Length: 253
Image (cartoon, rainbow, N blue to C red; front, side):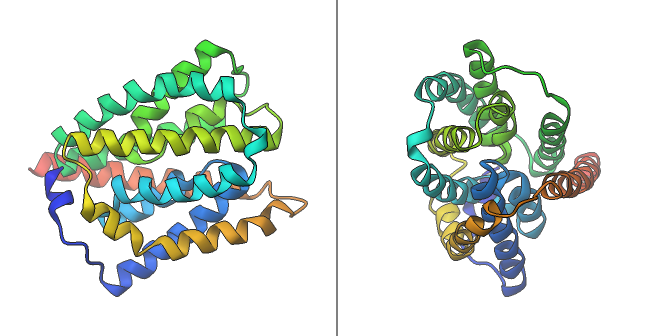
């Protein structure tokens, strides 16, 4: 998608406000639960301005996951982190080649399908254990999805979902942090990430920081069970709309 990268790093005020709202909410959810930044932000930002996906969202997600990983660094599972990254790297390289090769319309349809996949992974699988083979496979799928759509958390969170809360959040945050850097390097290597993505992302950094700061209050709430189904339902609806729009654009091309 070279036309996305070549666009000037300018956002009109209305798209900017919409993007900031999405990033703020995504920052709150990511820092509160260990997952959710891309799942919340990416579908909205693709609708607001396609130039923001996947590069700018990955960049902003990197910032939030860095802060979250540092906050709970003592809980990181180093063995699980290494296993996940061994799968994430080849997945990210493959995804970088795909992003550089597909048309914007096909990318939107593929994006929507992968968001739906992420939602389904977040809902249905309850018995996956964090064995080394499972973590490696989850890392590969996360690298593929995370680089294509900036939504790489669901596969890796799936295998760590039964782990103690702080360990899960810290390990997944560290994985997403390093994985996001790998994804940006992969996209850059295929000409699908550059200074335009970074400059666009920098305009949204204040929203990401505010979201992270607010997350400490969400963590303290006694009941946040409503948050997960609400986020997943919204993401499913947006992804279905994206699939339809992308398919119509692809057929019309």
